[in-house]
Image 1 (tube, rainbow, N blue to C red):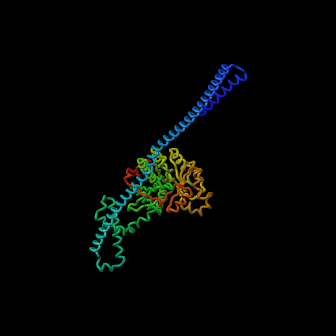
Image 2: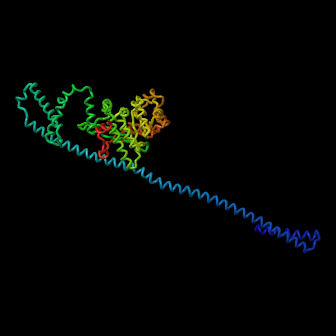
Image 3: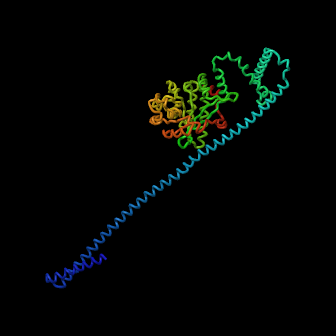
Amino acid sequence: MANISILFSISAIAASCGTVMVYLFARPVGEAITVAFTAMCTMIFIHFMLTRSQEKSAVSDAVNRLEERIAVIDDDVGNLEGRLTGVEHNIPRRTREEIDPLFAEVEVIGSLVKQMAEAMADMETRIEDQGIAIEDQRTKQAQFQPQPAQRLASPQAVKEPSVDLASQAAAAFASAAGQPMAASQPMAAVHEPFAETRAPEMKRPAAPRMHHPNAALAEEIRASIEAGRVDLYLQPIVTLPQRRVRYYEALTRLRKANGDTLEPIEFLQEADRTGQMPAIDNILLFRSLQILKRLATRNREAGLFCNLSPSTLMDENFFPGFLEFVRANDTYSDLLIFEFSQADVAVMSAIEYESLAALAELGFRFSVDRITDLRMDFRALADRGFRFAKLHASRLLLHEDDLAKSNIHPADFGSLLQRYGIELIVDHVESEGAVLELLEMDIRCAQGFLFSPPRPVRADVLQGAPNPRSLKKEAS
């Protein structure tokens, strides 16, 4: 419609030009028609060129907008491809990370059920054996029951046979110890209750020969080490709030010959005094590496805290072999953390620090536990390779008594350690309320009976543990 109007206008203008030339300038009609037609063609050509230029500009703008849209689509497609690639790689990894802890927990539950079944079977066997022994003892007592005249004898007459019987039992015990004899023989079952009742008389003559009040404990520790009765327990350290196992702490227990367990609080001081801690630490290190190798086969990245005594770092016989052993297994340096108490770290000398430096050069990290003084120079510890610190939950949550012993509020202690590159682990957590308070303080690692008590490691995992005697010979 617009083009028709324009053509009509051009025709009117050309006719007007011809009319003006005829009537105003008195030009011939033929010449006026020629001029009018020429003017009309010129205006039509100009209009056509302008219209085409506008159309070309509009097409160019449309093409530019289309190219921009195509570029945006290409970017979106590239981002989508990147996300799809990330999903393809991340979903299997996340699935594995979520399933592996479940498999591990199922395996732990299975091992606990197996241990419980074995313990119940062992308990039933012991109860049956004790019942048989008691019946045999009653039968013997009924056969050899003293007459009334013997019952009226003087105390001295009764006491002397008791002493003779005790000496005879001691001689029988010594002879039995020197000869191989099965534990299930009937004679041993009959004499076991008697030996227990006469234990004080048997041990009494040896008392004057003890030069130290803990000599019996020292001998018990030595016997447990040489007999291989050094048990390894593991307690998990979990992340909060997920409660996913991130680390384990290796704990040592000694078993007496009678099956009783010696806790670390009972034997550590005496073992350190008698120089037996290096042997215990060597066994603990060997078994800790066995645990790490077992975890590595399951694609687990859980680290292991291994407690060490400063006497091991100073022992000239044990530490060179100790260092050579960890150097041969330095592939686990990022998973094995050596732990020392704050009291031991505070009194370390240049010799211990040199030993720590040798371990740090191999990539091993350290932890300080049983913290009681928050004013310690933790920056210096960080420079020496300490990357973890353990604080008792009661000292962090019930901090009224500690405010006067520190330059920082205990609730801010974790933030202070983070500045030095040290991670705070709160141990002895035993209630859900404590977990809530730890989360408010932004504590991300915790340990305690609330999550799991220390569990013994199965014997099949620790097969091939070193003999302490051979360790001593190799070190010497």
